[in-house]
Figure 1: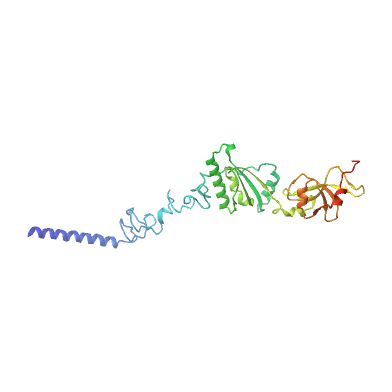
Figure 2: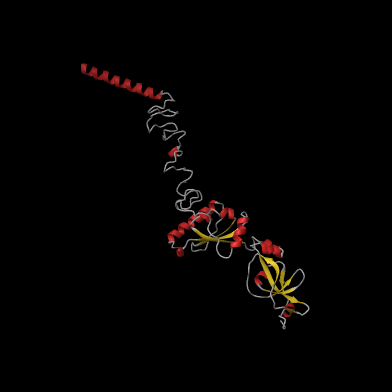
Amino acid sequence: MLRRLAVSIISLAVAASACTETNHQLNADPDAGGAGGLGSSGEPSGGATNQLNAGQDGGGANSGDGGAAVRESGGDNALDSEDGGASAGEGGRGGGIGSADGGAEACPKRDGQAPCTGEEEAMCEQAAQERDKELIFSLDLASERDGASLADMQRNWDCVVAELEADGVDVPMQDTDLDSLVVTSTLEQVEKALQLEAVTGFGVYCGEELCDYCWGLELDECKADAFCSLMSAYPFDPDRQCVASGAPVPVGCTPLGEGTSDAPCMKRLADGALFIATSGSVFLASPDWGECSETESRLAVSCEDD
């Protein structure tokens, strides 16, 4: 009997102690940040690492200021890390290969810009002065000739495409071997991609649609514009009724470059003057020229005494 009474007294004492501890935790000073305080909202000083509602520094699961998954602390696995981005960053493809901000290791950058290649240096210089001018950019990518493997070429392609798209460039489907990329854009939009090591060089040109203003330029204006080319032809001498075989003369301006090498008889629509063109395709595309009639074509022959 006495033994059962002693056990009962010990049980009551344990229960009372548990209630006291629970009450202490539930009513803890909110500024104290106690060891296991369920409602702690202030700066915890020495609190347990797993407290449920810890303040900013506690890093708990439901932390109000600390954020889920150590968002603010910048941990290695932060889901919303501002710089690293999740797997593939904004605009990225292929598991972060093309992450615009976090792909520095996968998409290394060069010091400066890739060189302008080919015979288009003057066009590159003009594009640098007219950074918001829409042009056609042809980007050369590292290839097997540069020692790149197929995996390297695919990674380079993904890097460049991701950077272009992140900068607002519409990248159309390309029929290519991953060693070149052609886009219509402004220099402002492509210059970050030109700073990637994946780009070994680039060219820039205009074309009829983007530079149709060339057709209306005066000869001096045409010479000063890198995206326009002079049109030249052999003039018909109405007095001698033949075409002089000397040097051709400049007669207009075109955005089409050199064009084909055929030499048809062409008539300038403004005054009806006849010429033998040095580039048939350029003259045929011009709104200011038309083909000679059959009779006119018979007249447009070289002068015999030249």
